[in-house]
Image (cartoon, rainbow, N blue to C red):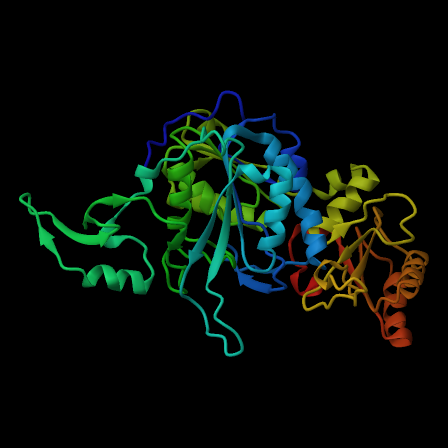
Length: 456
């Protein structure tokens, strides 16, 4: 582990975790300031995660709510534009994804970073989980590796730092079997080697000779009882991030993870003597990674410790009710919609009573005349209405009911600081009358993160 006394960057606010929308945070970073970017964003996988966090035993729902591949790409595109802007010309960019959208993601990144900036499609192969009966088992993720300096090869690549002895190299079973079946020889120094005939030549390979890994990585997935496992639903093994950080950055370089979840990339960067910045929209995730940095990396939380190179800070955790009351109305609407896992309306005027949408799991796309079903918007979504008021009254509920009827929605969410008894009575009457559900959510419930069951 690198010494923890290394001081933060003098030009950038490093060793910091930011809680909030990464798009807004990225816009505040200067151009070309990051050496290595790794992101592991939601996969558009339509999976629902229910997790009991080790810190508070708090039940938390994680849902990849993207109504179609187009919406997923529309969500990621502006973020990847900003990530490319902050990446140094000599920097490296790793986008972690899987089969749900990897091919669409590559097209997007080719457009943003450049086709000639693409270096590798890395396959992370693992064995875990159940076995499929109706198709080939899906047992790999994809990491798309880019650098603006790919053509000139002026990017950091420390192959020696991640080299593996040939006899322990990550080879597929058939290749490894062929290797082990080759006759062993011992040279004068006692080293074991094997020979392979090819193209009229005899090639000698030593078992302990370090070789750079191929683009297929056999790194074990975290198992249920793995001591490294935190319970975070999409946690990646530290060995995976260690390899990326070692290969594509140098000591004291700045590593950025804009979807940092439980902070595996931050731990790898800290252990290897790099500077780092983490961003995540989930307050719970930010608290989990802070606890992990304290316990695993032995860092202290606080500005004074960070300034002396022995700590880190967590910034922008959720506002108080007082701060939210003073926030401009449109910003408050965006905060509430994003906190629910929804997508805010792009237009702030003329929203016809709907401030955002939640796209649930298990949705099916509309039929398409063009045949591009994967790129069509989903028809199933839930409207969100937000009012920056102490008590929402019945007239507000009536207007939301009209909006739900107009859009033919059977479930919607209403966010406010509180609800009058008349409003709650009308919500119940609406259910009995129309068999439609309005879920009232208070700001306090959102801040206390007790809404998982209501939103799921």
